Image (cartoon, rainbow, N blue to C red):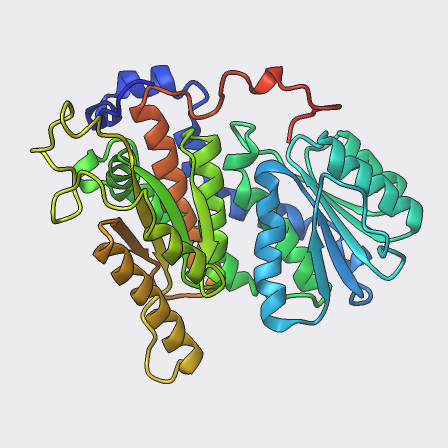
Length: 391
């Protein structure tokens, strides 16, 4: 792999040559995806699936569309009115029946798992909402089930860059069914925050004033453990790990506090901690590669955090903050470089949008800095996967 060169991130010719599908532009359109989806949902008869609150909700999605299930779970778990499950690759759960809602998601409308589960849901008489391309097998499954299809078309055509275009219809449907409560003003605020982030991370902002480019430079020297300090940041951490692996071809593990505290602390105390680093956590310029061995990526901690608790937030929020700080302190004491990013205050979806935008852009810049096309990777098309279809 070509060594990472941060100067290439400011070279428009290089960016265009490597980012063949203009993935950066697609990411910058996330706010527009939310607004476009709001308009489409307003023109869609969601009342057909909102007559009664479902007993349970199952989300059928794979690949980049899996974020739909994670975001819904984040909101539903906070209010707890129904059971929610998510799995788009296996069979439809046996408990799904006429009292349940199935949300099948595929940007192309052709992903084999979600289409198969949508058809099975129709056979069992479950309520069915499908989200994806118009005039597709997924849309056809909804039509035959007398369900509802929300058409989604995102420039660029990658499910990884279409997260908010796919999530927004699911949020509208969940609100209509009484499963979650996401007022229109919250989605407007999410769109605005995504726009603000896209402006901060725009390609013509030089790397030393662009937080996403700076994060890409920092990650280029690390094998990161991505850790969220709570439910919102946990969803962001999962998304970040997937984007680093699929977009930047950088292996990354992830976890969420407090559940992952013990395994992360143990990992940060292991043989991959420390290494040839300066006292401030950077690379030791005096390290001798012949005597000390080649300098490779060192273990690093990317800690995604919610805002510091305010007075009256309650003991659980204080405990969350203290646990995250304890892990960060332990990592630093072990010689592990710690990168921290804290979301600005706001609704959980706003905070999630801010962190996802940062790490989505950073993963894309990381690929470009290595001379890698962020949209494609050699060998994936050669995998022998049964009935493989676009996400």
